[in-house]
Image (tube, rainbow, N blue to C red; front, side, top):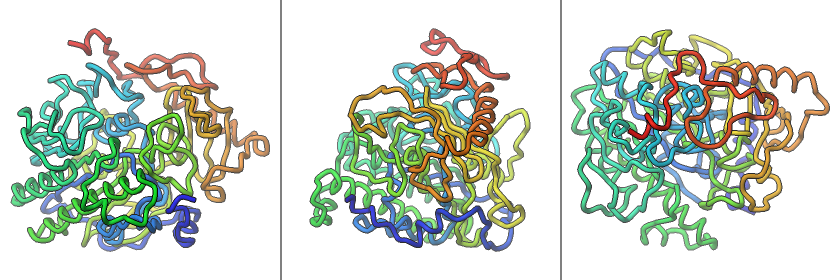
Length: 474
């Protein structure tokens, strides 16, 4: 049994409850504009944080952040892959609307027609910085400093050695020496916060931990003699490195008097990779079923925290939310008006967290990754997912399953398929998903995106300017 399989009964019970609002304090003020800190972990397992009940990996700083903020029991990302989730986060839109459905390769990347959160906050007078992983394009026109970030320290690709400085840049200049990426990213984040303490700032702190390759420092590995599995032990050492870096960042906020004027959001970019046939890292997604690369809960439901000390009272939020919401929430906190022509899919979460609004932020959430799909509306979820998650054969590119229907309130592990028992509910959700799917773009790269149930092959939706591969390669 995985070491984190025995999650606290209370945590599991809370995650199954019907949506509810939390008890909160006064509504956030807009003077002065708050700092915005978005922290993203990479390929984290849902079970691998203390605030979800993990026992073998201590995460005291993440637990303290969750205790000081609002923990989302149904916090999602819009894709089970690294780059698409980041494209959605930075644009506030379902990434499939502009063709960024799969991880980019070669000259591909976030279309330059899209506006980022950094663009919008920079225009509002914010200092903007990215520390860590970009994974949204190698082309000069796609470089972070061309996408709204004034400062950049990190790497452009999807993964990187933790000990080798090759491909690490400060702005556009190669970094010659580096000790360990997680430690370096923590220090750079601290320096950015100290440097800009007199003015509002936006920092996107995107760790590559705990993505492969599995690299850890010897002193941290030595802290886990009780974990027999070498891969899990390395994963644990990588997790505590990220946790320590986050602790240093929060300590700096407190020491510089910025703690109560900083909105902090934390997510993983997708679930942990646990499926045979793909590269795994030792993560656990329990009690969720499925893995990174699937539209099951294990691929898309992630640790999700929003904290704003002095403005949002700590609590638990049960209604489904998605990382697209963090884009709009950050704009709202900064006092930036969201214009209708931006066509954002995210929702400002602040009124729901302050009690100004009740109920769920979304009527439904949607997913598409090639032949895989899902929709969650209320407690019900309709899903077609990679059959490798079931067969565990280790053979990639298997066809997707037939449509399956789950009641997540009663069945968080997606084990009791209700498709045959509730065909009307299945048809209702399929119809809603088809309507959403008809608005999406044809992927700019990657696999076919004509899922079962909608075989018409839609072209890019209204307002989307289709860019050819030739244009992308310039």
